[in-house]
Image: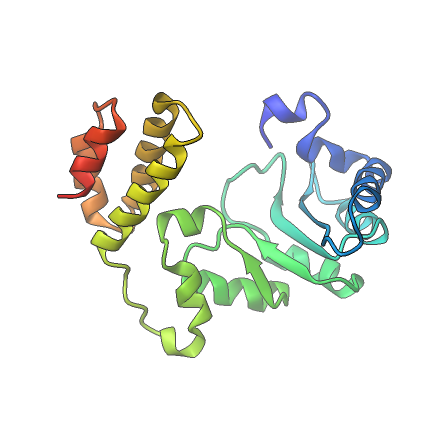
Length: 215
């Protein structure tokens, strides 16, 4: 939904032109080997969801084997709540699997999303960043009635590992920014993340941040 993207008739702005959506997906399908799965992800629409079904069917007919839908329009951005119930008509009309996305931040959110959308599968976004154990909690199913929170030392190890991987590809300034962003998102679920963020807030070196995370 970023204005930087949509102002160039890209991203969710394309949902105003289902024929163009079909053309793009079909071009990808034709460009890769038949053994390569082609999937797509879209929002419900641009300003409203009037073209949601038309876009979904355009993607299916273009050869995509799965479709994920973020249950909000571009105009709605990331403002809660995601409208999971709006996915049900799409799921019923499609023959390919529909994957639900948007505002799935807990096991309870997952259950309500499945009930409202009728989708068997979901895609996790920011919820998996703020709660790295969420996918495993969902996978455990009924056994996860009272899921145990992920231990902070395990989360700190994940963040450290991520910083090391990013350092191989990106400038240090970018890596530091991303680590701080992740810790900010973790604060709602994990109190130690708040303490760690306060300690690293002014640091500018990955090595210094890793020292804090190892404490």
